[in-house]
Image (cartoon, rainbow, N blue to C red; front, top):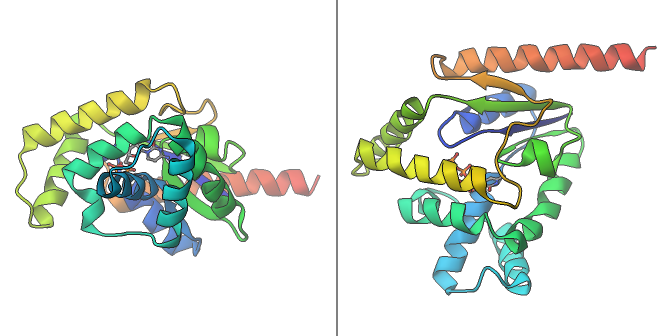
Length: 215
Ligand code: CDP
């Protein structure tokens, strides 16, 4: 089973994906981390992301040597990731890896911005996780404080707004809710409440598949 999750920054996609991965025992791919790692590599090497050959070799190197951790979540890398994510050469270079990850048995959970629409539109379960802008900004602000970083709520709110706008309006794989994705608004829910809703959707989908198979 492939579970595809999209949604804007701070909506709770990552939290839900990790809980689902633990609960179902499926591998999880945070595709945002791929874009962040690619952005960091471009910043470090001052390379040209518009050049398809450079984009391909950068992506190959970050997939082999996946950088992780706080380096990827600085405000510089966050904004750069959204900028380079609009470049078709970068998206094309990352596509194959994501698709292969999704199709490896027994299944996978992927989250991002174009998972339900471009990466695996054939996913068995498609979710669009969202929340009010102010709630998302507050969560991000709290995350930064918890990591011991100096953070200003208004700045976080502006950054999220800028990124949402860039992600929604780009021509290459813009963030949007797929027609057949189920929306979960997490504004007033705790992580386990969101998990419960998602598990209900997944079990309904499994029952539907079972009915089709036994016809
Ligand atoms: O964690 P957060 O939701 O703030 O962001 P992320 O998922 O780590 O993604 C960082 C950036 O990568 C996003 O703002 C998008 O521009 C880009 N991205 C994308 O374009 N497509 C994806 N499938 C995943 C991320």
